[in-house]
Image (cartoon, rainbow, N blue to C red; front, side):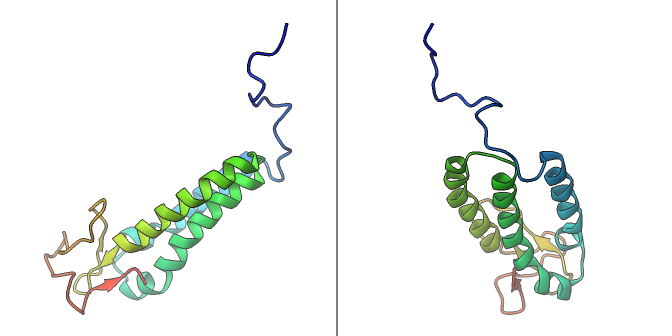
Length: 131
């Protein structure tokens, strides 16, 4: 009987993984936990210094993890521009309040204008973007 779905991926046709998925999952969880001070802390100097590299790094780690765990390269190639778009949106969206150090990240496609915690204007020169 002929095979009905010749493009279906099974365990035998998947490329060999360079690292096991479990190791990547543990690394990803540790990476997320290390990012909690950037999202929920009030240390503005820490956020200004490490937020942008952390956001860009998360996209790179995600794409690298997809490639290293044995996902077919055509799926990695499809996912790369999508992850790049999400990374750009995250960089554009995050603002930090200079008054209280809170992270304002609650609008899907618009930059936050006011701090949800203290009400300070995030559009002024005193507000800092995720940089």
